[in-house]
Image (cartoon, rainbow, N blue to C red):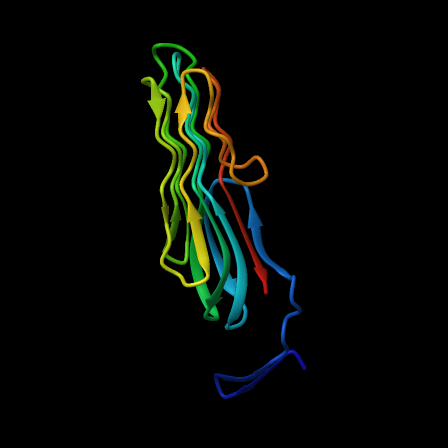
Length: 170
């Protein structure tokens, strides 16, 4: 028996094993997901890296990670896009997109348009999670990725790398 209901009330649900991936993606966009059980989950959120300008590299996205208690239910989460780099004077260099889940925000890195670009800001409110602001970009060095290559700022005239989310049963 996986689930047992009395009327519309769930009275029994088989426990999902530790280490089961509930959601993982580095493809930008919003997703409607289901958290299957009320329990602890290992969570990683990375904001997208900012695009590199003609004179300055882009900044890195913020990182949020740790183990947090989540309630069973439906949630809308968002993977941040990568910032686009300078191509010509008629194209826009863009910031990296914010990655959001469970009211936590791993901010995207700023685009490189002046001498420095500010790293994304981590906004953390859930107990058990920690946040690290993204690395700044400079004229000769992009903001580094804080997690496995995701959320890195772009070199001059190149795109940053996109954001990332992973949610696993703990």
